[in-house]
Image (tube, rainbow, N blue to C red):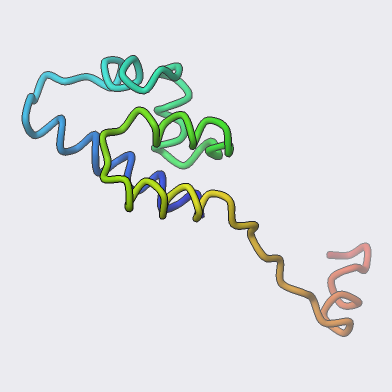
Amino acid sequence: MQENVVHELINQWSILKSKNPSYSLRAFSKKLDIPHSALSEIMNGKRRLTQKMGERVLLALNLEPDKKEQLLRSMAEKSSYSTLELQRFQAISHWEY
């Protein structure tokens, strides 16, 4: 899901940062063509990566086609919700909780 893409994003940034210690997050965001504030929030887990922005980021990164396709497929997967048992729901649905 989106965690895979965010992990790859952080990995690519750390690779570029290790090659050039003065490489900034602003330069990386310019390469990806997204706002630097959005990139920072995404990398810090404060903002979700949308499908559209995820596709744009993956296209801008120089990844192997197989890896890019795998990450695009993982972005398209819907997250599953867990169901709540009736007894547990009744316990937490009271106004005291």
